[in-house]
Image 1 (cartoon, rainbow, N blue to C red):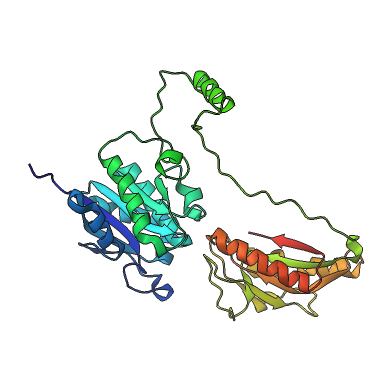
Image 2 (cartoon, rainbow, N blue to C red):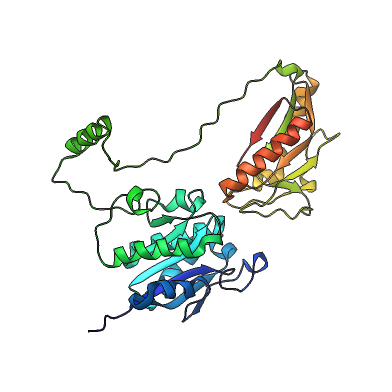
Length: 351
C-alpha cells in the first residue's frame, strides 16, 4: 500500500522567494501552489513522505510592521491548503524574518492544531518571543549550511507528524521550552524536583522542566575621575537622526549606527531631527528631541560645573529587532570611537 504523501505548507520571505531584497521588503502576501526557493530542498529531503503544496510569501517589513493583521491572514492561507505539516523559514539570524517565522509558526500550531516547525539562530529575536509558543529548531546564523539546517527541521517535523514522543529541547534540538507539552503527573512535582536534584548531585543526566535563558553577564564599569571633571557622551538606541535621514538609517533590524555633531548646540531643535525607529510612540521625541538625546540638560550641567564636558557627537541606532550579533558589533565600534574621543562616561538612552 502506497502511503499518502503529507501535504506541507511552507512560509518564506520576499528574499527567498526571489522577489527582491530590502527594496521589496514592503510587498504584501502572495501564494504559489508549489515549492519555491528553500521549499525545493524541503521537497528533496521529505522524499516520499511529503510535498510542499503551497508556499506563502510575505515581505519582511510588511509582516513585521503589521503582525496583528498579517499573521491571521497567513493562518487562513495555510488552512485553505488542508496541510498535514507547516514549516516556516528557516529564518537564521534575520531579525524581521525570524520574528515572522516565530509568529506564524506559533499561530498555526495554536489555531490549526497541526505539526508546525521553524528554524532560527539562538540569538534571533524571534526565539525570545516565540520559543515558548512554537517549536524552533536551533540552526546556524546564516544560510551557508542551509542543507544541514533544513535536514534538522525535517527530521524533527516528521517526529511530530508520526506522533513520536518529544523530549526536552536539549535532546531534540529545539530552543526554549517549545509549546506547552504533556508532563507525567503520575509523579508529583515535588518528587520530580527531588529526583532532579539527586541526579544533579550524583552527576547523572537530567533536564529541567523549565529551562531558563542564559544571558551574558557584563560587569559595570567604574568611573575613574570625579564627575565634574568627566567627559560625558550621549548614546541612544531610539533612532534619532538629522532631518532627511542622511545616512539612510532603517527603523528595524539596524545594519549600522550614526554619529552626529552637536558642537555648539545648547539643545536639539525639533525642526532639525526625525526618528527612524518603529515600535514606540515617538510623538514626544518629535516634539522635543532632547527627551531622547538630552543635550539641553547635559549642557546645563556642563555650565553648572556638575560634569566636565559634553562630548561633541552623539551616537544613535534603532534597537528594535536588531540582531544580537549586530548589537555587539555596534557596541564594540561605538566604544572604540568613545575611547578615541577620550570619553569618560556615557548616558545610554532608550525607548
